Image (tube, rainbow, N blue to C red; front, side, top):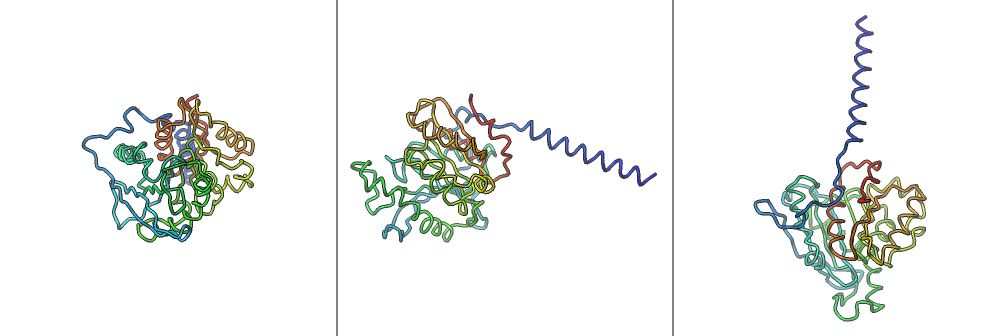
Length: 297
């Protein structure tokens, strides 16, 4: 009799736990968009720090500059995952800081306990000796330098960060995201190097984005290896066909991803919201079944 009672109680507990797990999944609250004031500096919160770094690029054969944001809780005794955050064709390593205030967005997210501690690296994605955004930004050499950055990122910048900062050096602790040209780079380099990145985000990806069949030649492998794939764009952005093309292919191939279309054009209003939303998904367990809830439509 006692044995039967034990089995009955065990079975009942298992049913209750399963129900609670399912209920929690269905009831999970997500942000549909960044809240008002998410990008405004707050008073009375702890802030992160921005470092300026210089690293030698064997790819370009010169010393290059980048910015590194460390979180408010930063301690050299801890190990952190890393988000590599890329700019657009008209910018450089300063573009996000000047137009997107990622440090303020992240400071506020930390204050609200909505994001995991991470280091954010903002490099110059134009990998050439004269890498400024001056002159004709559409010069073929400058455009080609954005493709060259793949080797600079993988062979030079990431090793430098992992040697000089307390970071976790595995693919599940690396994210790659960017705006416009940097969004295209993120899709090209992130999906093209699944052994290096588990999180990929593209905000208004530009025409440099490769065709989806090239980006994802093996949908099953991509589905298995990626933790989060985010693509967002403004509904008035003339470049939205590149986002739509990639989304359509991913949907046809049943590759889990978030496709987030919001009111707006090709501007920082869209990109800042994308950064806010994407950041909250990084370096934590995420259930792909909620991906389709990330929409304003």
